[in-house]
Image (cartoon, rainbow, N blue to C red; front, side):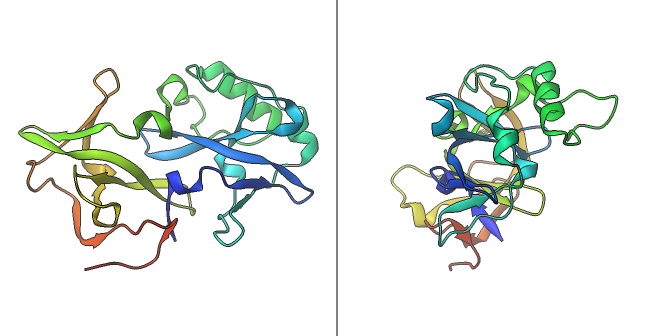
Length: 212
């Protein structure tokens, strides 16, 4: 099932033992177009927000507004803190994965995405452009929980309702210009490549169907 990532912000994060906290943001790798971390506010650890590997998360429950995780409260209680508002270095990612004893998402001998990770809240409202014009602005990202891949940008043109947002495949992203707050696509403004014209994006969390 597909999920609108922004709609998952605020969800409760729960282990088998108890509530851990709630989601405040997500970090994703723009090279692989996959979510990599949950940013979680954990009340028992003060006002700081912590990064938990997305690989520890199971499919969200819309009914309970909850994301189950397979980490124990003990693992989370002792988890190292890295400032989620600063670039995440490869060394800090190694520390996080070593603490949880999880196999890292990057292949052995290669580098992690590290400082290349982007927050959902950062990319939201980026302009989406082609070589000859503006398509709209990023309203959300579309993911699925098999491997937390981000399949599409949810792009809304100015003056259009959220229910008529356009889904544009991330495979067609040419460049993310962080300094310029924009995402460049291949194709023309009126008909960018990989636009899913057969579907619009509902305003609720999951997208199980399509609208004409």
